[in-house]
Length: 311
Image (cartoon, rainbow, N blue to C red; front, side):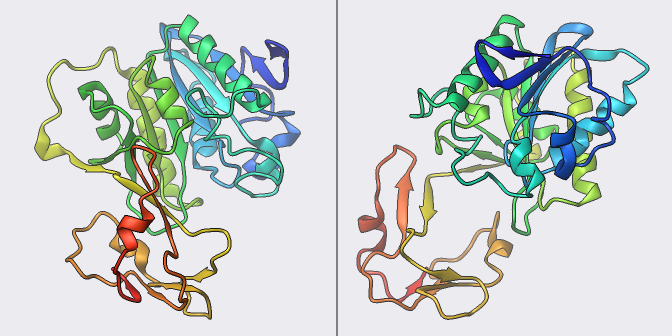
């Protein structure tokens, strides 16, 4: 075990440490002292890269990797596998990140976070993977809503779309936020982020395991385009955030903004114009912040002249 380029927070291993396979995310810090990069050999030398626990309360990625480690404990991997297990401290508290920590999926190369120890750590990981001629990258996450399994890409490249459809026919193309793992790795290889619904779902973990195994067995990426009937492709054109000084609720309680309690059921559906998403209970002129994919704040354009119902 050692640190990488003077960054004491990162350990680098060439084997799966004892106890890792059996230890749940909430106690993984008893096995790994901090963020850990693991390089394992395989029949094909160019590694698949998989990252997990970039957010400490999203454990499907770790559970999927543990299953893969267990399966190949006594047999060689089809392809070399490099694994990054991220925020083990936050995982011990079942939190996305701890107070004072940056978001581990906002500090990869491309983010305006240069100088942070976490940013330097991610830069060194990317450098390691570049030297190893990384084959493909998968970043595994969970989310809080009732969502189908879906994949996200940062490049409209057929190789990226093919990798994404190994997980789901529902694919999202996005350019913001900056500093995410998939955007950094997309400079080196086909890269995807996969969203596996809520944590604790065995079926979602199964899909993540299937994706890792399919990518490990993949010899090369097909040259032909992904058939469009096999793909539902969405484009994120903006990110909507509630400002810190605005209160909100999904349960009908008193707040500045009352979102529909089943708003997550509207995801990945065509909604008719005028669909009500929330009620505004404040006289504030612009209650939400809207960031376009070019980085411009466009809330004043988005909300100008809107009624008290958010549509």
